[in-house]
Image (tube, rainbow, N blue to C red):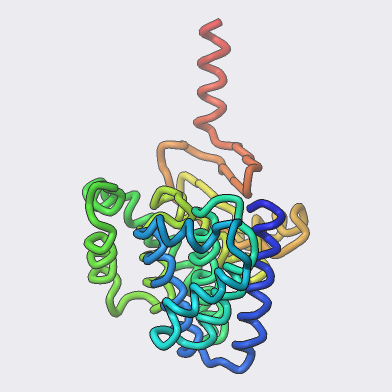
Amino acid sequence: MASVNRESYAAAAEKLTAATQQATAAQLATTADEFLSVARLLRGEPRLRRALTDPSRSGGDRAELVRSILAGKLGDTTVDTLATLVSGRFSRPSELLDASERLGVDTVLSSADKAGTLAEVEDELFRFGQIVSGNAELAVTLSDPSAPAEQRVKLAQDLLKGKAQAATIQLIAVALEGFGGRSFESSLSRLVELTAAKRDREVAYVTVAKLLGEAEEQALAAKLSDIYGRQVSLKVDVDPSIVGGVSVRVGSDLYDGTILRRLNEARQAFAK
């Protein structure tokens, strides 16, 4: 996000924080739903996105346009926050969509934080990603851009009903709709990272040939925490094809100590 857009988003987020200091988890969840419904509206209405980011209009005019469309249909907090958001500047109309969607996601996370379920949401998002990647038919169905998002969201909701936190289901719907223009898989990974960040943690994606013991996980987490200067949330995936060793990815950093990598390097060396 460009600096002016960051400023616009920061002003809206500050307005939202001030208005929801005393809000309950349920009230925050409702506000999150409203932001996400506006994001869906903006996704389907490019002319409205352009009107709400038109630099030839004053910020006040754009804010009044939002109020004229949404007042009485959504809560005052949502309308006031969005009015603050559109009164700022955006270099592209699509950035308003991204900002509205991010407000929704951040509010979902605040709701889960208030409810004390953030850690569960983080784990459920990661586990759902593993379930999908391990089922080729489900992965194709959920990632199919030609299928209506509503249909794919309904499928995920049916699969998760009674098995996951409400916040998890909300966020998976956002991922299926292409959070920030990403693919479903990338959206889900980004949401895992944002959930961890809300808990002031770094995410480490760990691949091993067989499950680590509790002591091994704790030792690895402690080592990574020392390296990155903050607590680390391990997301462990078991892949027998790596034979042995461990691969760890934290952000753009990759530590690959797998036997498979060493075997591949040896094959390449012999092939020269």
